[in-house]
Amino acid sequence: EGPVIIVGAGHGGYQVAASLRQAGFSERICLINDEAHLPYQRPPLSKAYIKGSAGPESLTFRPEKFYQDQKIELIAGRAVSIDRAARKVLLASGETLAYGHLVLATGARNRLLDLPNANLPDVKYLRILDESEALRQIMPSKTRAVIIGAGFIGLEFASTARIKGLEVDVLELAPRVMARAVTAEVSEYFQARHREAGIRIHLGVQATSIEAENGKVTGVSLSDGRHLPADLVVVGVGVLPNIELAAEAGLPVAAGIIVDEYLSTADPNISAIGDCALFASPRFGGSLRLESVQNATDHARCLAARLTGDKKPYDGHPWFWSDQGDDKLQIAGLTAGYDRVVLRGDPAKKAFSAFCYHRDRLLGIESINRAGDHMFGRRLQAMDRSITPEQAADESFDLKSALA
Ligand code: FAD
Picture 1 (cartoon, rainbow, N blue to C red):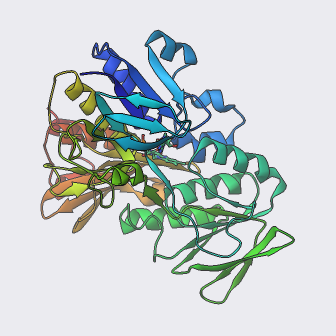
Picture 2 (spheres, rainbow, N blue to C red; picture 1 turned 135 degrees about the vertical axis):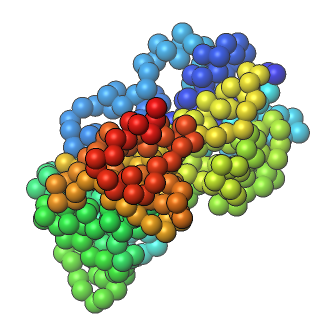
């Protein structure tokens, strides 16, 4: 009962507000937004947005009128502390907001590079719209980019920078790209494709320093002694969940704000969702913190349902995508922990899927330019079914028959 105050107006925060109204919630809803834009989609920041010329309004979920019509109060500002006893949130402006339920949808922030010169204007990050915009604006005046980190964001940006005509070097400490997220088969495919596009990928190396002259970046030195010239450095070395607000209010945190399978913190009046939440997962066992639109949006829907009387544990099926150059990667399920990979389709034809198994249990599917396999995987998982590795590898096996 009482107002719902949501801290953070990203994918999760926006969706809780929208879903609450959809479910008929009639009390006050405030969405605290510390970015100077209407709530917007983040994935295009490293994809279509940075490649194209459309303005920020092309990214917004809904126009301003939606918030007025739905009586969702967008409050510009930053939440700085929580008074749990009084059930109030304090904003940086000095304003306080009383809550019946508080939703922490604070997301994550860039992990910063701890190197000299890392704060120069030619060193960029890519998390928020303002950063994507800044990068888009300086790119035409740049000729050589060094990208630190071969995760999704680093590689998505690398493809775009190359298409825009820049020389591109990508540094990665791990022995393969996207190592934490995809199978070796998929890493190798992307390494080959990016190299074909003229991107130089350096594996097993670290940046040890950024060189500059008169405040302008001139290059990056590597742990193997090499030196790469550069006039632009883009850092994509992961994120840190924004847990401080919760921690300072005495809520348990670890690698995220700790919540149970209902997404509730230790305080029944406070929940946490999306990138910032370390949630108990009966389906996967133990706790998970995921960084995806699916996770933030489905968390939001689950929480909105609970706050309007439909209490169920969160049991979403993870899925994800990444666009790199002409290739579309789609992941259904969580593939970590696999001990067997079966390919369906042909990497040489630029269309295949890696079916990942633990023993004989299908954990997930990584598809490249095989949207049908991806959708199949999502439907199969929603039905809690599996197919055998032999069936997966056999192109004559009709996937649809497994869904019947
Ligand atoms: P966010 O969307 O990060 O929103 C959190 C918001 O809270 C931010 O606006 C933040 O500024 C604000 N905030 C934090 N603290 C406070 C405070 N104290 N007061 C007020 N506001 C606060 N996922 C996919 O599934 N597919 C993709 O292709 C994909 N591509 C991506 C590309 C990029 C460049 C990035 C950065 C992410 C991408 N992601 C992708 C991940 C996805 O965007 C995130 O998982 C998702 O945005 C998480 O939603 P969230 O609501 O938890 O956090």
